[in-house]
Image 1 (cartoon, one colour):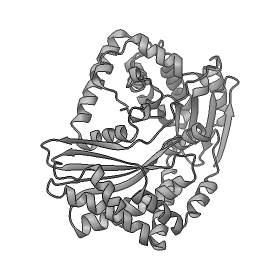
Image 2 (tube, rainbow, N blue to C red; image 1 turned 120 degrees about the vertical axis):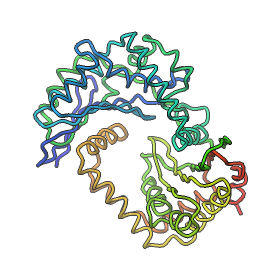
Image 3 (cartoon, rainbow, N blue to C red; image 1 turned 180 degrees about the vertical axis):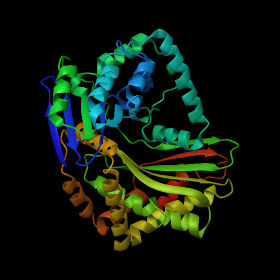
Length: 420
């Protein structure tokens, strides 16, 4: 498998990886225009725009967009994150050109029909309402807001209802003008693809675009803080976040190995102590996520009202214990889980195309997979213990609680336990 990368004269980038033996391909456009690129009055518009891409172009109606891909047995979708908006499809190898044509069409030629805007506005408002009715969704939005308070990175991707209710056709067009330039776009494909053919298609579809300077996202600052809402629910939802490295910091591998050992599987410390030994919850996990310039290690659990206080304090105790006695066997197991998860995931052309796009967005290049594996293997038990100590004692923290949480400790109380 060979990664190839090119760039048009206007800055539009193309990256692909041919995967021998496959009869299908994943292809998409990743645009550096996510939630953190919105001004406060635009919060939610990147996601709104993603929805509108499927509501009609100058050449196709909404139904024709869906039929074009589904008539050949393919799949088309999109998503908005805090750093990118992606439009992608999975098709058989003979239909790559069709998928490219449809994706290029929805990215370049949306008509923003006023009637369709109103229909989709209603859909998104329902999506926001559904999120508020899903505690283990909304708690992560609150945790993000407390982690990056009063910053674009801390705002919800869906946006508040009052802003979504007011977005106009001109607002959508303006966001496209600001952020959908060729230098902000990456065509990524993997599977049964021909790079030279992709280059020709990209030149034909995107080569005419004029370069434009993209707006630089505000640098992230992990602030920390607490959000707590008492509500009559079956479970108390508890989430902690700690400042961690971003993607461009090699310490990200240490952070990910640590969070896997702490709460990444059935053999992890939190799962064994909190669930298996004490029976305090059904779900508990730890994970590390990263952005270009920052990251968070997050711990989440759902428990009963009378046990949330015990669960919170045991979590802090387990973090402190990890700093003292995390052993080489645990680190080796977490390292193996991390490598296996990555390599297994890359057997999917969709995951591989996603990885290529993200690496090009972050680094401007695709480091060899062997280099990434070597960095994972280079993480030592001492590295993990040192990281565990920083998280357990001194790293800035955020707390979110939702449900019957009157018995839960405050962030200040948890900070005291960290320092004890």
